[in-house]
Structure formats: C-alpha cells, structure tokens
Length: 174
Image (cartoon, rainbow, N blue to C red; front, side, top):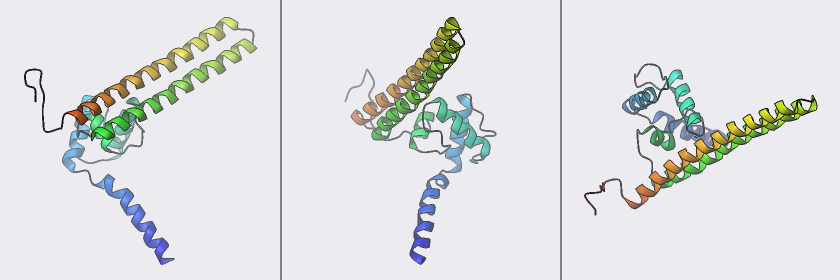
C-alpha cells in the first residue's frame, strides 16, 4: 500500500512540476505575446491565473494545437516566446494537421447531416446549400491547419540545418 501511495505522489509531483517551472518573466512574456496576438490573458503580471490559462487555450485552439492551457514547448514556440527543438517543431506540425483535419471533418459531416435533413423534408436545394457550407467550412479549417503545420515544419527543418547559435543571412553564408 505504501509503495502505491509513494508512486502516486511521485507521479502527481512530476505532472505538476512542468506547470510550476515557468518563471514570472516567462509568464509575462507569454501574457504580452497573447495580448499582441489578440487574446486577453488579463493583466501582464507574471501570474498564470485563470484568464491567462483561458487565453492560452484559445490561442492553442486557434493554432490547431492541443488546447490544454499548458505552456509546453509547442505553445511557447508558437507564441514566439521560446524556440522549441527542431524535433518538437516537426511533431507540432503533425499535431496541427491532426487537429485541423479532425475539426474540418466534423464540419463536413455536419453539412452532410444538415443536407440529409433538408432532403428528407423535400428541400433539395437547401440541402445542397447546407452541404456546400459544411464542405467550405471544413476545407477552410483543413487549409488553415495545413498552413500552420507547414510553418512549424519549416521552422523545424531550418533549426535542424542551422543551429540556433548560428544566424545565416543572404549576405553571410557559413
């Protein structure tokens, strides 16, 4: 019993540490970045409170990241606060595609359901319109997520090829 309790406490502690590991200055940078991008984290005070976590979730959802409100490397990178490793950026691209395609698929499915209801009631034209709206909204979400993913993967490739401490400009080649 004691081993189970000790293991449980250790597991909970390890899960909480990353959330607590963010410094006040990092939280302030995150809050300012969220404000700059049109999300309201409340006051820029360095405290990861309810409003900040809600703004983080909104930002994550808008950028096709897992909307958990946590400040992991993917979110910090997407906000421009702290650059993630190139492998993390590559994984972020996959996550963005997965989340965006799931959202887009739901919209397309909803358009199909709306169309079926309309056709059932003899409104074939309205059904076609509803289906078109579902496909249009779904395709827009898929396109947006593909764009986010392409940017993340491009950053990952660049960072894998050019180390963070070496800047390459068109005038200066290594």
